[in-house]
Image (tube, rainbow, N blue to C red; front, top):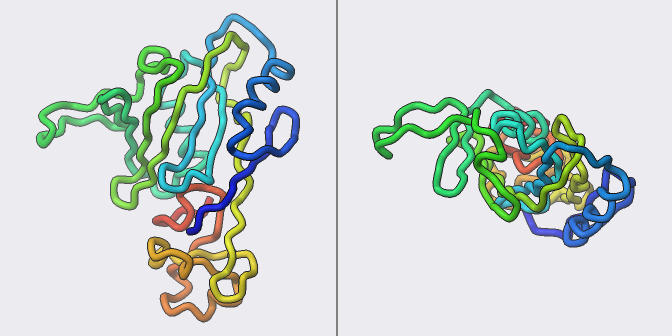
Length: 219
């Protein structure tokens, strides 16, 4: 899928910004719209590693577990078939179901770890969902503040990218899961999807997620 300028909406004020300007805006908008308090709160930026036009800015309590963050990512962007997942942080793996790995000679750590025990502002890390048809996310702790946030809050999210049907240029509504790695040929409107050689069983809806077109993900 070709890269395009990405923009999205700030959920605090409702205005639209480009991906490049939203971080600076949120620094100001949080001060105007979010209450201060005595809880440590992390501001995370999350994007598709290979599809960075899909992105989120969130706040999450620093005392929350990696499992809480994993569940949020699954619910918002990833879950299709109950696949395994893992965070990779500073050379350590934090697995959703840690078991001894004879190849690595060690057991991954558990996602029960608290964010403030393994993360700090400025740190970058990754998340992988599904070790077959993998969706990898790049995450960064942008900042920390004292707030009242008790659960994950989406501060901003990208608008759905404009993806044209390869046949007619109208907005694509279907993506072929067999052809998705081959580029533009996978993206079709409803009319031209009926003519596609792979058959209707291979199609998935176009959704606003870096997992679009993968496995059985329908959003």
